[in-house]
Image (cartoon, rainbow, N blue to C red; front, side, top):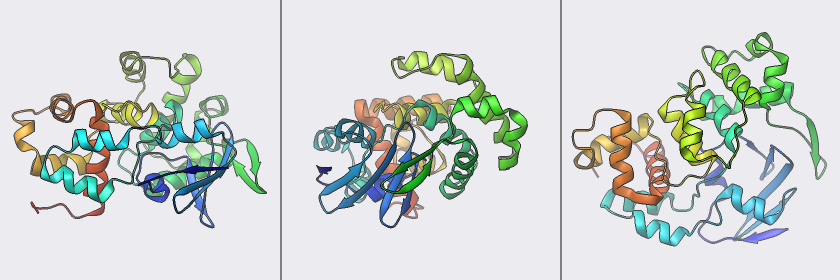
Length: 274
């Protein structure tokens, strides 16, 4: 099956640090959360199997009105450069549990290490599946992590994140949390999990739930904001106040502005104004 796409890069989107459920092999991307998925890009077509078209589009943000979004957030010279550099990316919707585990593991870490840890955890906790002759192990579920216990989790050398991951698995196991929840309900639930603060929460909302007004800020974003958006930040000191200032500035599609700024800043050395 195939989907026509324009101004979209599968590689750039899946390599941009938004989600940690895919790996690439022989020019094909594989994922196994609920069902195995194989997908590759051939020019302006996405060739895939394992999921139906609506699920693929939702996962990869292909239903978003991208031209409208770019026009709406293109408010200054810096974001204009970021859009031109990173405009082939889309905000994904990885799901609440995959985003929760991935962004807990992202604390004081890097993308390659997160992916290696999740692969090791998938090999241990995951169910086996197959797609087009390729054997896959599923993304580690909170049920398996909790049921096998805290001591089993120690083998993955997650350091201080071990207790955070187990806390998250236990909370999801014992509490009903799903995508029907409002942003306020998600925040009230997830903030109870050891290790989840405002930044991780915003990542879950944007990249897990596809809440396009969320604006997570890590070191790359904050560095760029201090250089290019100090007038917008004003006297804001706290994370919450800075986030509010940026959401007010960029509006309902602030999450896309965040993605473009993050990707542009991460892949270019942003030290001084250009």
